[in-house]
Image (cartoon, rainbow, N blue to C red; front, side):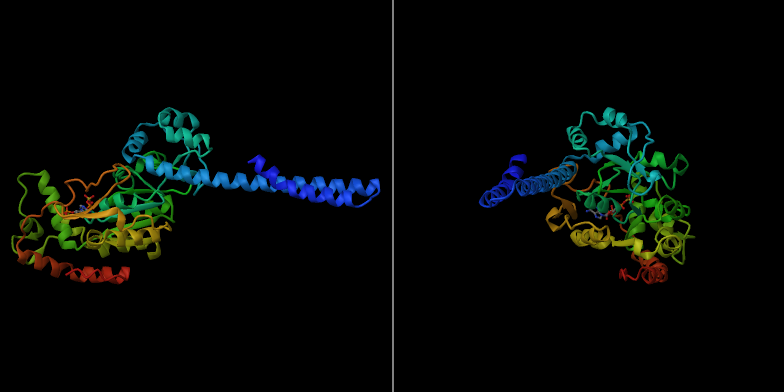
Length: 384
Ligand SMILES: Nc1ncnc2c1ncn2[C@@H]1O[C@H](COP(=O)(O)OS(=O)(=O)O)[C@@H](OP(=O)(O)O)[C@H]1O
């Protein structure tokens, strides 16, 4: 680098000396000319050296970012998050309460074995934990796991591996506890977490607002009738003597009165929950993702998510293929695995047969709530 700078300064020097020698100057003029000459050489050298150093630094940083994204394993980091001791220092980004730069000792002890972190430290880039900038708040059984797995393919998105349930179950543990469940990130990366029960839990909008009113919220929604059946299917898979769906969704065994206290039915009244969120967050901070479209055209929905988060469109149709056996889009590779794979077997279960009369009655029940939801969001999801 130095050689290059010096070489580029040589022509200026040569020109100056020719100019100087070609004139018969007094020794005073000669001294002035020499000073100008030396100054010119000095500035020319410094400029070139700075330019080259800056180009080299940006190249190194971009390579490191790619390296971190390519080599990171979300599962390992979730474990690290659970195991490492609490941090108290803070650095840049939102505010001191939202940052989690761990003391050098903590990073060294928990991550020493990872070459990527050693490399990052050598370059002066210290990975740290941050409170999430973006949350996937729901809706349960609408495709929240698929959304998270798809968006985290982006090198600038890092996500907590499992549902943290901070705002609904562990709020009393405090933000420091929450931050320690977040993955390590470097500057410019988005921290994300998904817990679908946030959408329907009364206290959560206010709590998220208090953490950071600029938090971006992603909400996957699906036809509430199929969502209810999916929810029931999951519950039934864990309980052998579960009553039939039709017995649980209606009061008194007839289809006349829908049981709105039954969880799988209640959660589908999206407008009711959305109104609570809108008391704290403007619509512009919320992005609604169609669960149906996430299955039919994942690249389209992920494109919208990347735009909303201000990310370059890196995740595209090239990342997905349709697996006919599974009946769902799957990934060619991901952060965790470099071979083609689908979501686990708890995603995309076979649903039991439900009496069409019960389905029709539920559709009728949801219609006014769906219309209200379309009105609030400005999107017609066209659920039947
Ligand atoms: N690519 C892909 N693979 C598998 N499954 C997919 C996919 N995209 C969306 N879905 C739908 O996601 C439904 C599960 O939703 P969630 O991930 O939100 O469930 S959970 O709330 O986290 O339990 C799941 O519901 P079920 O079909 O009832 O199992 C799927 O319909």
